[in-house]
Image (cartoon, rainbow, N blue to C red; front, side, top):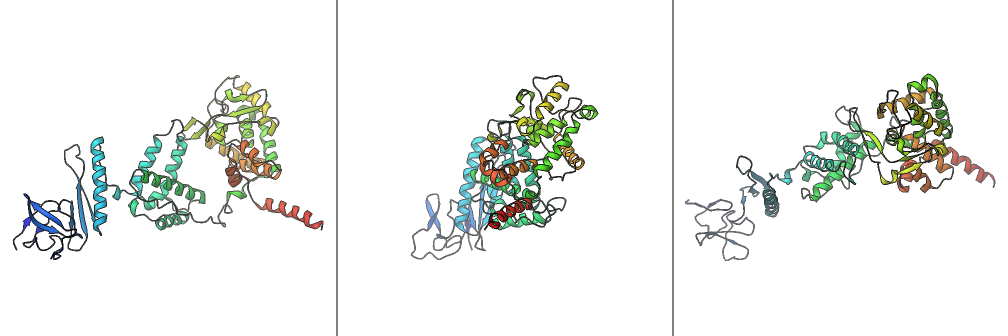
Length: 453
Protein backbone atom coordinates (compact mmCIF):
# COMPACT_ATOMS: atom_id res chain seq x y z
CA UNK A 1 0.00 0.00 0.00
CA UNK A 2 1.37 3.38 -0.98
CA UNK A 3 1.08 5.96 1.82
CA UNK A 4 1.91 9.58 2.38
CA UNK A 5 2.46 11.47 5.61
CA UNK A 6 0.47 14.49 6.67
CA UNK A 7 0.99 17.12 9.35
CA UNK A 8 -1.00 17.47 12.58
CA UNK A 9 -1.33 14.05 14.17
CA UNK A 10 1.12 12.74 11.55
CA UNK A 11 -0.62 9.47 10.80
CA UNK A 12 0.13 7.59 7.61
CA UNK A 13 -2.55 8.25 4.96
CA UNK A 14 -4.04 5.20 3.29
CA UNK A 15 -4.27 5.17 -0.51
CA UNK A 16 -8.05 5.55 -0.27
CA UNK A 17 -7.91 8.43 2.26
CA UNK A 18 -10.52 10.32 0.25
CA UNK A 19 -13.04 7.52 0.80
CA UNK A 20 -12.38 6.50 4.42
CA UNK A 21 -11.31 8.17 7.68
CA UNK A 22 -7.55 8.40 7.67
CA UNK A 23 -7.45 7.61 11.40
CA UNK A 24 -9.94 4.81 11.98
CA UNK A 25 -10.84 3.63 8.46
CA UNK A 26 -14.56 4.38 8.73
CA UNK A 27 -16.08 4.50 5.24
CA UNK A 28 -17.16 8.01 4.35
CA UNK A 29 -19.74 7.26 1.72
CA UNK A 30 -22.05 10.17 1.09
CA UNK A 31 -21.68 11.57 4.64
CA UNK A 32 -20.32 15.10 4.79
CA UNK A 33 -21.40 16.49 8.17
CA UNK A 34 -18.61 16.96 10.75
CA UNK A 35 -15.97 15.31 8.54
CA UNK A 36 -12.75 17.33 8.35
CA UNK A 37 -10.50 17.84 5.34
CA UNK A 38 -6.84 16.93 5.22
CA UNK A 39 -5.16 19.32 2.84
CA UNK A 40 -1.75 19.77 1.34
CA UNK A 41 -0.77 22.74 -0.81
CA UNK A 42 -4.42 23.69 -1.09
CA UNK A 43 -5.57 20.27 -2.24
CA UNK A 44 -7.77 17.87 -0.27
CA UNK A 45 -5.87 14.61 0.19
CA UNK A 46 -8.00 12.91 2.83
CA UNK A 47 -10.66 13.08 5.54
CA UNK A 48 -11.12 12.38 9.24
CA UNK A 49 -14.47 11.36 10.73
CA UNK A 50 -16.23 13.14 13.66
CA UNK A 51 -14.87 10.51 16.07
CA UNK A 52 -11.22 11.19 15.25
CA UNK A 53 -8.88 14.18 15.70
CA UNK A 54 -8.52 16.64 12.87
CA UNK A 55 -5.33 17.18 10.94
CA UNK A 56 -4.58 20.36 12.84
CA UNK A 57 -4.80 18.74 16.29
CA UNK A 58 -1.75 17.28 18.08
CA UNK A 59 -3.75 14.14 18.80
CA UNK A 60 -3.44 10.67 17.30
CA UNK A 61 -5.86 7.79 17.50
CA UNK A 62 -4.26 4.45 18.33
CA UNK A 63 -5.36 1.06 17.06
CA UNK A 64 -6.71 0.33 20.53
CA UNK A 65 -9.15 3.22 20.16
CA UNK A 66 -7.42 5.41 22.74
CA UNK A 67 -6.04 8.84 21.91
CA UNK A 68 -2.48 10.11 22.34
CA UNK A 69 -1.96 13.87 22.68
CA UNK A 70 1.42 15.60 22.51
CA UNK A 71 2.04 19.32 23.19
CA UNK A 72 5.43 21.02 23.27
CA UNK A 73 6.28 23.05 26.37
CA UNK A 74 8.35 26.16 26.95
CA UNK A 75 12.03 26.10 26.05
CA UNK A 76 14.43 25.47 28.90
CA UNK A 77 17.88 27.01 29.53
CA UNK A 78 19.31 24.63 26.93
CA UNK A 79 16.84 25.83 24.30
CA UNK A 80 15.04 22.48 24.13
CA UNK A 81 11.26 22.36 24.32
CA UNK A 82 10.02 19.40 26.39
CA UNK A 83 7.00 17.43 25.26
CA UNK A 84 3.88 16.91 27.35
CA UNK A 85 2.27 13.61 26.41
CA UNK A 86 -0.89 11.89 27.66
CA UNK A 87 -3.22 9.09 26.65
CA UNK A 88 -6.99 9.38 26.96
CA UNK A 89 -10.00 7.15 26.54
CA UNK A 90 -12.07 9.82 24.80
CA UNK A 91 -11.36 12.46 22.19
CA UNK A 92 -13.09 15.17 24.23
CA UNK A 93 -10.84 14.49 27.19
CA UNK A 94 -7.77 14.70 24.96
CA UNK A 95 -8.97 17.98 23.47
CA UNK A 96 -9.64 19.51 26.89
CA UNK A 97 -6.16 18.53 28.01
CA UNK A 98 -4.55 20.02 24.90
CA UNK A 99 -6.38 23.31 25.44
CA UNK A 100 -5.32 23.41 29.10
CA UNK A 101 -1.69 22.65 28.28
CA UNK A 102 -1.54 25.23 25.51
CA UNK A 103 -2.93 27.93 27.79
CA UNK A 104 -0.46 27.00 30.50
CA UNK A 105 2.48 26.95 28.09
CA UNK A 106 1.45 30.35 26.70
CA UNK A 107 1.26 31.88 30.18
CA UNK A 108 4.60 30.33 31.18
CA UNK A 109 6.21 31.70 28.03
CA UNK A 110 5.02 35.22 28.82
CA UNK A 111 6.33 34.91 32.37
CA UNK A 112 9.57 33.31 31.26
CA UNK A 113 9.04 30.28 33.49
CA UNK A 114 8.97 26.53 32.95
CA UNK A 115 5.61 24.82 32.65
CA UNK A 116 4.49 21.61 34.27
CA UNK A 117 1.47 19.53 33.34
CA UNK A 118 -1.02 20.08 36.20
CA UNK A 119 -2.97 16.95 35.29
CA UNK A 120 0.01 14.95 36.53
CA UNK A 121 0.69 17.00 39.67
CA UNK A 122 0.99 14.81 42.73
CA UNK A 123 -0.65 15.55 46.06
CA UNK A 124 2.82 16.42 47.36
CA UNK A 125 3.42 18.93 44.57
CA UNK A 126 0.20 20.79 45.26
CA UNK A 127 0.63 20.80 49.05
CA UNK A 128 4.23 22.00 48.74
CA UNK A 129 3.19 24.81 46.41
CA UNK A 130 0.42 25.77 48.82
CA UNK A 131 2.83 25.77 51.75
CA UNK A 132 5.25 27.94 49.77
CA UNK A 133 2.44 30.39 49.10
CA UNK A 134 1.48 30.48 52.79
CA UNK A 135 5.15 30.99 53.70
CA UNK A 136 5.05 34.25 51.74
CA UNK A 137 2.31 35.46 54.09
CA UNK A 138 4.30 34.98 57.29
CA UNK A 139 5.03 38.32 58.92
CA UNK A 140 2.80 40.29 56.53
CA UNK A 141 -0.26 42.29 57.67
CA UNK A 142 -3.11 39.84 58.06
CA UNK A 143 -0.81 36.91 57.27
CA UNK A 144 -0.30 33.74 59.25
CA UNK A 145 2.27 33.18 61.97
CA UNK A 146 5.34 31.02 61.45
CA UNK A 147 4.08 28.59 64.07
CA UNK A 148 0.88 28.16 62.06
CA UNK A 149 2.88 27.42 58.92
CA UNK A 150 4.94 24.83 60.78
CA UNK A 151 1.73 23.37 62.14
CA UNK A 152 0.48 22.84 58.57
CA UNK A 153 3.75 21.19 57.59
CA UNK A 154 3.68 18.90 60.58
CA UNK A 155 0.02 17.99 60.06
CA UNK A 156 0.60 17.07 56.41
CA UNK A 157 3.79 15.09 57.02
CA UNK A 158 2.19 11.75 57.93
CA UNK A 159 -0.57 12.15 55.35
CA UNK A 160 1.96 12.68 52.55
CA UNK A 161 3.82 9.53 53.57
CA UNK A 162 0.76 7.57 52.46
CA UNK A 163 -0.63 9.57 49.52
CA UNK A 164 1.98 12.16 48.57
CA UNK A 165 2.87 10.47 45.26
CA UNK A 166 -0.75 10.01 44.15
CA UNK A 167 -1.89 12.06 41.15
CA UNK A 168 -3.99 14.78 42.75
CA UNK A 169 -6.68 14.83 40.06
CA UNK A 170 -7.21 11.11 40.46
CA UNK A 171 -7.66 11.24 44.24
CA UNK A 172 -11.22 10.63 45.38
CA UNK A 173 -13.02 11.35 48.64
CA UNK A 174 -12.87 7.62 49.43
CA UNK A 175 -9.11 7.70 48.91
CA UNK A 176 -8.75 10.55 51.41
CA UNK A 177 -10.90 8.79 54.01
CA UNK A 178 -8.94 5.56 53.54
CA UNK A 179 -5.69 7.38 54.29
CA UNK A 180 -7.24 9.04 57.35
CA UNK A 181 -8.20 5.61 58.69
CA UNK A 182 -4.62 4.45 58.18
CA UNK A 183 -3.38 7.50 60.11
CA UNK A 184 -5.70 6.58 62.98
CA UNK A 185 -4.21 3.09 63.24
CA UNK A 186 -0.71 2.96 61.76
CA UNK A 187 0.03 6.67 61.93
CA UNK A 188 3.11 8.14 60.34
CA UNK A 189 6.79 7.29 60.25
CA UNK A 190 6.81 5.74 63.73
CA UNK A 191 3.91 3.36 63.17
CA UNK A 192 1.74 4.84 65.90
CA UNK A 193 -1.82 5.99 65.37
CA UNK A 194 -2.30 9.74 65.35
CA UNK A 195 -4.69 11.51 67.71
CA UNK A 196 -8.12 12.48 66.46
CA UNK A 197 -7.13 16.13 66.70
CA UNK A 198 -4.03 15.57 64.53
CA UNK A 199 -6.08 13.74 61.90
CA UNK A 200 -8.69 16.50 61.78
CA UNK A 201 -5.93 19.09 61.47
CA UNK A 202 -4.31 17.14 58.61
CA UNK A 203 -7.63 16.93 56.80
CA UNK A 204 -8.18 20.67 57.23
CA UNK A 205 -4.74 21.44 55.81
CA UNK A 206 -5.35 19.14 52.83
CA UNK A 207 -8.65 20.86 52.11
CA UNK A 208 -6.93 24.23 52.05
CA UNK A 209 -4.16 22.95 49.78
CA UNK A 210 -6.67 21.45 47.33
CA UNK A 211 -8.72 24.66 47.37
CA UNK A 212 -5.54 26.51 46.39
CA UNK A 213 -5.01 23.97 43.62
CA UNK A 214 -8.50 24.68 42.32
CA UNK A 215 -7.92 28.43 42.35
CA UNK A 216 -4.75 27.90 40.32
CA UNK A 217 -6.58 25.67 37.82
CA UNK A 218 -4.56 22.57 38.74
CA UNK A 219 -7.58 20.72 40.13
CA UNK A 220 -11.18 20.60 38.97
CA UNK A 221 -12.60 19.41 42.32
CA UNK A 222 -11.60 19.15 45.97
CA UNK A 223 -11.69 15.51 47.03
CA UNK A 224 -11.09 16.46 50.67
CA UNK A 225 -14.15 18.70 51.00
CA UNK A 226 -16.63 15.92 51.74
CA UNK A 227 -14.16 13.61 53.46
CA UNK A 228 -14.73 12.90 57.15
CA UNK A 229 -12.19 11.96 59.77
CA UNK A 230 -12.69 8.64 61.60
CA UNK A 231 -14.71 8.93 64.75
CA UNK A 232 -12.81 9.48 67.95
CA UNK A 233 -11.98 6.27 69.79
CA UNK A 234 -13.79 6.49 73.11
CA UNK A 235 -11.59 3.71 74.49
CA UNK A 236 -8.36 5.57 73.76
CA UNK A 237 -5.58 6.01 76.24
CA UNK A 238 -6.79 9.50 77.05
CA UNK A 239 -10.37 8.44 77.68
CA UNK A 240 -11.28 9.40 74.14
CA UNK A 241 -11.30 13.14 74.61
CA UNK A 242 -9.53 16.06 76.13
CA UNK A 243 -12.95 16.97 77.54
CA UNK A 244 -12.23 14.70 80.51
CA UNK A 245 -9.08 16.59 81.39
CA UNK A 246 -9.94 19.52 83.56
CA UNK A 247 -9.60 20.48 87.17
CA UNK A 248 -12.25 21.33 89.66
CA UNK A 249 -12.13 24.84 91.09
CA UNK A 250 -10.71 23.38 94.32
CA UNK A 251 -7.86 21.68 92.43
CA UNK A 252 -6.97 24.93 90.70
CA UNK A 253 -6.79 26.69 94.06
CA UNK A 254 -4.63 23.87 95.46
CA UNK A 255 -2.24 24.20 92.52
CA UNK A 256 -2.09 27.99 92.96
CA UNK A 257 -1.30 27.60 96.67
CA UNK A 258 1.62 25.30 95.89
CA UNK A 259 2.95 27.68 93.22
CA UNK A 260 2.93 30.49 95.79
CA UNK A 261 5.49 28.58 97.89
CA UNK A 262 8.01 29.71 95.24
CA UNK A 263 7.33 33.40 95.95
CA UNK A 264 10.39 34.02 98.14
CA UNK A 265 13.66 32.64 99.40
CA UNK A 266 15.92 30.31 97.48
CA UNK A 267 13.07 29.01 95.34
CA UNK A 268 12.24 32.51 94.12
CA UNK A 269 15.90 33.27 93.40
CA UNK A 270 16.24 30.09 91.34
CA UNK A 271 13.00 30.51 89.38
CA UNK A 272 11.80 34.09 89.74
CA UNK A 273 9.41 33.75 86.80
CA UNK A 274 7.52 30.73 88.08
CA UNK A 275 4.83 32.34 90.26
CA UNK A 276 3.94 35.04 87.75
CA UNK A 277 4.05 32.65 84.79
CA UNK A 278 1.82 30.03 86.37
CA UNK A 279 -0.63 32.52 87.85
CA UNK A 280 -1.12 34.23 84.50
CA UNK A 281 -1.78 30.82 82.94
CA UNK A 282 -4.42 30.23 85.60
CA UNK A 283 -6.02 33.50 84.51
CA UNK A 284 -6.88 31.92 81.17
CA UNK A 285 -3.94 33.24 79.16
CA UNK A 286 -2.44 30.98 76.52
CA UNK A 287 1.12 29.78 77.09
CA UNK A 288 2.25 31.83 74.08
CA UNK A 289 0.57 34.93 75.53
CA UNK A 290 2.26 34.49 78.92
CA UNK A 291 5.66 34.00 77.30
CA UNK A 292 5.15 36.94 74.96
CA UNK A 293 4.02 39.40 77.65
CA UNK A 294 6.05 42.61 77.77
CA UNK A 295 6.49 44.84 80.82
CA UNK A 296 5.13 47.74 78.80
CA UNK A 297 1.78 45.91 78.82
CA UNK A 298 1.68 45.35 82.57
CA UNK A 299 -0.20 47.77 84.84
CA UNK A 300 1.67 47.46 88.12
CA UNK A 301 -0.92 49.56 89.93
CA UNK A 302 -4.12 47.85 88.81
CA UNK A 303 -2.72 44.34 88.44
CA UNK A 304 -3.87 43.98 84.84
CA UNK A 305 -2.00 42.81 81.76
CA UNK A 306 -2.73 43.59 78.13
CA UNK A 307 -2.38 40.70 75.70
CA UNK A 308 -0.73 42.17 72.61
CA UNK A 309 1.89 39.61 71.54
CA UNK A 310 2.79 35.93 71.70
CA UNK A 311 5.98 33.90 71.71
CA UNK A 312 5.86 30.42 70.21
CA UNK A 313 8.06 27.57 69.07
CA UNK A 314 8.86 27.78 65.39
CA UNK A 315 9.52 24.10 64.80
CA UNK A 316 10.77 20.89 66.35
CA UNK A 317 13.96 22.52 67.61
CA UNK A 318 14.49 25.12 70.32
CA UNK A 319 13.89 28.23 68.20
CA UNK A 320 11.07 30.59 69.17
CA UNK A 321 9.53 33.64 67.58
CA UNK A 322 7.88 36.71 69.07
CA UNK A 323 4.95 37.94 67.05
CA UNK A 324 1.37 39.09 67.07
CA UNK A 325 -1.55 37.51 68.86
CA UNK A 326 -3.33 34.44 67.52
CA UNK A 327 -6.58 36.17 66.53
CA UNK A 328 -8.16 39.61 66.79
CA UNK A 329 -10.22 38.35 69.74
CA UNK A 330 -7.00 37.49 71.52
CA UNK A 331 -6.25 41.20 72.07
CA UNK A 332 -7.67 41.90 75.50
CA UNK A 333 -7.01 43.18 78.99
CA UNK A 334 -6.81 40.43 81.62
CA UNK A 335 -7.79 41.39 85.16
CA UNK A 336 -5.16 39.14 86.71
CA UNK A 337 -5.38 40.51 90.25
CA UNK A 338 -9.16 40.26 90.25
CA UNK A 339 -9.14 36.65 89.05
CA UNK A 340 -6.36 35.47 91.38
CA UNK A 341 -5.67 37.91 94.24
CA UNK A 342 -1.97 38.12 94.97
CA UNK A 343 -0.91 38.23 91.32
CA UNK A 344 -0.14 41.96 91.55
CA UNK A 345 2.27 41.32 94.44
CA UNK A 346 3.98 38.59 92.40
CA UNK A 347 4.30 40.91 89.39
CA UNK A 348 5.88 43.66 91.48
CA UNK A 349 8.35 41.23 93.06
CA UNK A 350 9.42 39.94 89.64
CA UNK A 351 9.71 43.49 88.30
CA UNK A 352 11.94 44.48 91.21
CA UNK A 353 14.31 41.50 90.88
CA UNK A 354 14.65 42.16 87.13
CA UNK A 355 15.80 45.72 87.80
CA UNK A 356 12.52 47.60 87.29
CA UNK A 357 12.44 47.41 83.48
CA UNK A 358 10.08 49.59 81.47
CA UNK A 359 9.94 47.05 78.67
CA UNK A 360 11.14 43.59 77.77
CA UNK A 361 9.76 40.10 78.24
CA UNK A 362 8.27 39.42 81.67
CA UNK A 363 8.87 35.67 81.89
CA UNK A 364 12.67 35.32 82.03
CA UNK A 365 14.83 32.94 84.01
CA UNK A 366 17.35 33.79 86.73
CA UNK A 367 20.03 34.80 84.19
CA UNK A 368 17.67 36.93 82.13
CA UNK A 369 16.96 34.51 79.29
CA UNK A 370 13.40 34.04 77.99
CA UNK A 371 11.84 30.85 79.31
CA UNK A 372 11.40 28.29 76.54
CA UNK A 373 7.83 27.04 75.89
CA UNK A 374 8.84 23.41 76.49
CA UNK A 375 10.47 24.34 79.80
CA UNK A 376 7.30 26.15 80.82
CA UNK A 377 5.12 23.11 80.03
CA UNK A 378 7.44 20.59 81.68
CA UNK A 379 7.59 22.70 84.81
CA UNK A 380 3.82 22.82 84.91
CA UNK A 381 3.65 19.03 84.92
CA UNK A 382 6.14 18.66 87.76
CA UNK A 383 4.25 21.26 89.78
CA UNK A 384 1.03 19.27 89.32
CA UNK A 385 2.69 16.24 90.87
CA UNK A 386 4.17 18.26 93.70
CA UNK A 387 0.85 19.96 94.41
CA UNK A 388 -1.00 16.64 94.50
CA UNK A 389 -3.40 17.50 91.68
CA UNK A 390 -3.93 15.46 88.49
CA UNK A 391 -2.06 16.48 85.36
CA UNK A 392 -4.78 17.81 83.02
CA UNK A 393 -2.67 16.71 80.05
CA UNK A 394 -1.65 20.17 78.99
CA UNK A 395 -1.30 23.58 80.54
CA UNK A 396 -3.75 24.72 77.85
CA UNK A 397 -6.47 22.74 79.62
CA UNK A 398 -6.43 25.22 82.50
CA UNK A 399 -8.37 27.41 80.06
CA UNK A 400 -11.01 24.69 79.83
CA UNK A 401 -11.17 24.51 83.61
CA UNK A 402 -11.71 28.25 83.83
CA UNK A 403 -14.35 28.27 81.08
CA UNK A 404 -16.34 25.38 82.55
CA UNK A 405 -16.18 26.80 86.08
CA UNK A 406 -17.47 30.16 84.85
CA UNK A 407 -20.26 28.56 82.85
CA UNK A 408 -21.38 26.47 85.82
CA UNK A 409 -21.41 29.64 87.93
CA UNK A 410 -23.78 31.28 85.46
CA UNK A 411 -21.33 33.66 83.80
CA UNK A 412 -22.70 34.57 80.32
CA UNK A 413 -20.87 32.91 77.45
CA UNK A 414 -19.96 36.20 75.81
CA UNK A 415 -18.14 37.29 78.99
CA UNK A 416 -16.30 33.98 79.35
CA UNK A 417 -15.30 34.06 75.67
CA UNK A 418 -13.97 37.59 76.05
CA UNK A 419 -11.86 36.55 79.04
CA UNK A 420 -10.23 33.73 77.08
CA UNK A 421 -9.84 35.73 73.88
CA UNK A 422 -12.22 33.71 71.74
CA UNK A 423 -15.47 34.18 69.85
CA UNK A 424 -18.60 32.83 71.51
CA UNK A 425 -19.10 29.88 69.14
CA UNK A 426 -15.58 28.56 69.70
CA UNK A 427 -15.96 29.09 73.44
CA UNK A 428 -19.16 27.05 73.55
CA UNK A 429 -17.94 24.31 71.24
CA UNK A 430 -14.44 23.69 72.56
CA UNK A 431 -14.00 25.30 75.96
CA UNK A 432 -17.12 24.55 77.99
CA UNK A 433 -16.51 20.89 78.79
CA UNK A 434 -18.79 17.99 79.59
CA UNK A 435 -17.53 15.26 81.89
CA UNK A 436 -18.57 12.99 84.74
CA UNK A 437 -18.40 15.81 87.29
CA UNK A 438 -20.77 17.85 85.17
CA UNK A 439 -23.12 14.87 84.85
CA UNK A 440 -23.06 14.32 88.61
CA UNK A 441 -23.83 18.00 89.23
CA UNK A 442 -26.78 17.86 86.84
CA UNK A 443 -28.06 14.70 88.52
CA UNK A 444 -27.89 16.35 91.94
CA UNK A 445 -29.83 19.34 90.71
CA UNK A 446 -32.40 17.08 89.03
CA UNK A 447 -32.83 15.20 92.29
CA UNK A 448 -33.57 18.47 94.11
CA UNK A 449 -36.11 19.47 91.50
CA UNK A 450 -37.96 16.17 91.22
CA UNK A 451 -37.60 15.29 94.88
CA UNK A 452 -39.81 18.25 95.75
CA UNK A 453 -42.78 16.72 93.98
